[in-house]
Each structure stands twice: as structure tokens, then as C-alpha cells.
Length: 200
Image 1 (cartoon, one colour):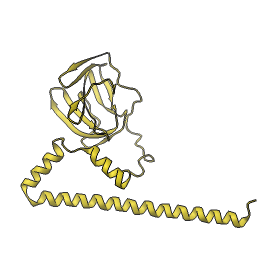
Image 2 (cartoon, rainbow, N blue to C red; image 1 turned 180 degrees about the horizontal axis):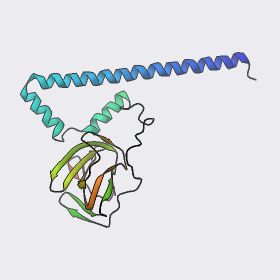
Image 3 (cartoon, rainbow, N blue to C red; image 1 turned 90 degrees about the vertical axis):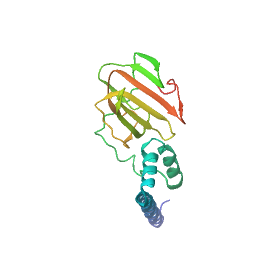
Image 4 (cartoon, rainbow, N blue to C red; image 1 turned 45 degrees about the vertical axis):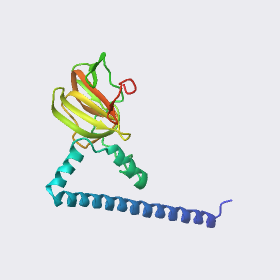
């Protein structure tokens, strides 16, 4: 039988648990922000020391040798998720498709695969990840490379009307742009080119 005293005790315990969780959440969020600020300032100091450091930093960050997957996994292991409330905040303005990439024909071409698709085909992201490269001067029109959390790089070529920018986080199924009858895909991990079967 529940008495008023036991009911009040349960409510007091729940209130204490909520307050304790809130304090832990605020503390961990502040620690994460502090670490990011320290890393950012350390990067600035390193770059400002000399032109050689500046060139090294450019090569590391902009020449596709920086593994966002490794950074993400280390950060997640020691500090938790990068975005603590990513499941509660949703951007409803993004165009997202639940379908897999639809193609009529596929053939091997250089390091990747050329797919025959419909005209003005809305191209969805095969996996979630970070846009690590955007090349608008490629022989395959605009090419976008997205790296997932496991280090898989998927490059999408022959694109027009791009919806994403460098270092954007892209969700699986999010529309990247349009492809007109041809879509070029490259699958690469650990400097090895992979077959398309596992991903399409």
C-alpha cells in the first residue's frame, strides 16, 4: 500500500536523480566545449608560429589525409557523442529519400563505377558522414566525397545542383544533388578501392 510518506519519498528521489543528471549533463557539455576551444587555440598557435607549420596544416587538413572517422571515434570513446542532442534536433528542410540508388546499368570505370540513371536523378547519400572533399573542376563534373564514421569514403561524381558544402554532416538518404543520366561512384577505404556490391 502506497502511503503519502512513501509517495513523497519517491518523488524526492526522482527529483534528486533529475537534478543529478542535469548537473552531470551540464558539466560534461562544458568539458567538451572547453576541449574543443583548447584544440582550436592550439591549432591557431601552431599555424601562427611559422609558414612551414601553416603549409603542414594545410596539407593535413585539405589534402584528404585527415581521417574524420578516427577523430570522431576517439572523441566518442572518451567524451561521448559530439552532438549531445542530435536526435532531438531535426532539420526538416533537408530533402531526404528512403530509397536506395536506382540505376539501369553499371560498369567499371577507372577506380569506380559508372551508373546509368534517369535524367535529373535526385542522388541520395548511401551512408551518413562528413563531406571531406568537393571538386567542381573534375572531368566528372562536380564530385563530392563523404567519409562515414568507419573511414569509408564514397565519392559521387557527375553531379549538378549540389545541396551540400565542405565539412557538412550528411545523413543517409539526404539528397546531395542531381545526376543527368550518369552517376559516377567510387568506394574507398584504407587506400583500397572497393567493389560496389556491398553498398548498392
